[in-house]
Amino acid sequence: MTALADLIRVLDGAYPPALAEPWDSVGLVCGDPAEELTRVLFAVDATAAVVEEAIDWRAQALVVHHPLLLRGVDTVAASTPKGALVHRLIRSGCALFTAHTNADSAAPGVSDALAAALGLTVTGPLDAKPESAVDSWVIQVPRTHTDAVLAALFAAGAGRQVNHCDCAVRVPATAQFRPMTEGSPGQETLGELQYAEEERVEVAAPSSARSAVLAALRAAHPGEDPVYHIGERAQLPSSLGLGRVGTLPEPESLRAFTDRVARALPSTAWGVRAAGDPDRAVYTVAVCGGAGDSYLSRATALGVDAYVTSDLRHHPVDEHLRKGGPALVDAAHWATEFPWCAQAEAVVRTALPGLETRVSTLRTDPWTVRATG
Image 1 (cartoon, rainbow, N blue to C red):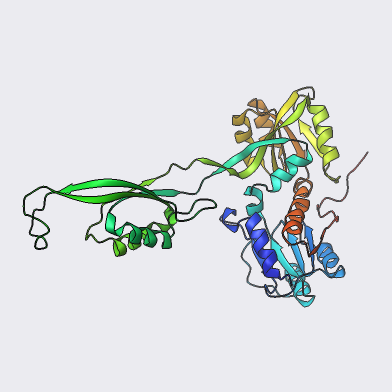
Image 2 (tube, rainbow, N blue to C red):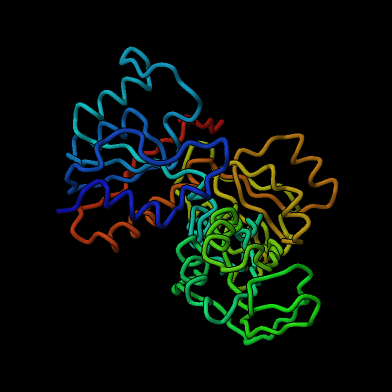
């Protein structure tokens, strides 16, 4: 039996909740993790029409990108628009799960799906997240106690690297010291230089585990005042982050590239528009699914030829072009994020092949009419 908990595990693995922005709301909105699951529907938005599609299809889970309940609420009464949808889902036995900015920053994520739809070869994030902070511990341990100290450090969260655990470096060492007070009888001679066989132990651990590792060290080390040093690794850019940068198979004009974007994305009343010289050559491209005007300066700094995103406004675009920034291609918000639905479906279908999955083809873009006159 496949349960809702299995779906949550797979989605959290692909789109870790820790990647979500602090203001975001992601994860399970409603539903019992213990309930059996046979059908899952994917969509960008949990609109009334999408909820009805999920229920009519007898799906037990609806996975969406945009949170239904993003900001704090004090009621989900059925008399409110969003509360009515929550009640409808619960009564029909359909869970609601959201992967928002955690899906934006994951690798692969929302912008990877957009880049793939445009035929780009991705080279990295537009705005990279730093790697998780890591401590490097260097500890002096009597050789007779090295195994015990390491076991304690590993239990506290040290020594884990990708697909390995209990990782450490052990280097034989000779410690020297001159006792200044009387020690144990027969072990130390006051004032005389002493030597002891030790090992220098090096382990890595998340900075978040620093207190636990230190407590474990003090509990397991035979010395009253263990000798240790903690160095923190510099936070380097990772492959995670918002947006993506990539290259086209070969350069093409902005006019041709804009047509490429229009062909790649589902049509909407908003359409696809570009700002810049129509004949400008485009080869390197930055993309950001959803609203991406906050990364205009970042796209400029990276020196790309064009930047594809949505929800661009008049004045920021005008100022951007005056400063010599890359050409801009503006598409509908929903359209730039729709390719992610197929990506998320593929993740679930691969991990849970017993499930029946489907991507909703309903256009949840709020714009419905485009004048042609």
